[in-house]
Image (cartoon, rainbow, N blue to C red):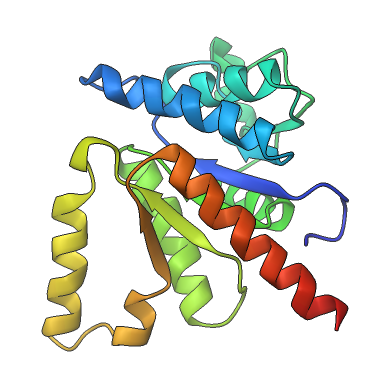
Length: 195
C-alpha cells in the first residue's frame, strides 16, 4: 500500500465529459458506489463534472474517502469539486499524475479521451519498467475499449509489445467485476507483504 494511508485507495481515470451513452454515467456511479462498499478510498482528477464527478459523488455518498488532485490552472475554472475529503492542487499536469500514482494502490480506468489514455499508458509503461507493481483494470463499459484492445493485440502481433506486458492491463466488463478484481489483488499483495 502507499505509505501515507491505512485504507487502500484506487485511482480512477476517466473522462471529464459524460459521454454520449447513458451507460457511461451509470457505470461511473456504480464504480463510485462499489469502491465505497468495498471499503476502499478514491483518488481521481478532482473535477465535479462528467464521469469524474459521478464517481466522486457516488463514492462520497457511500462514505468513502475521496481525494481529488487537480492542477491549479484547472481549479480556477470552476470545475473543482468542493465536497471532497481532500483536494490537492499541484502546479502542473506532470505533478498531478505523479501524485495520483503515489496516493493509489491500484488503478481503474473508465471511458475517457486523450487525458485518460495518457494516464492509462503512463501507468502501464511504469509497470512494464517495474517502477510500480500496482494492478490496473480497464473497465470495458458497453465495449468502449474494444478498438483499443484490438490495437494493443496488434502491437503484440507486430512485435512491439511483449506478451507478458500485454498482461499488465487487466480487463473487466463492468464496475462490479473491476472492484472485485482489485480487492482480490490487494488482498494478495497484503498477504505477500506480511509473509
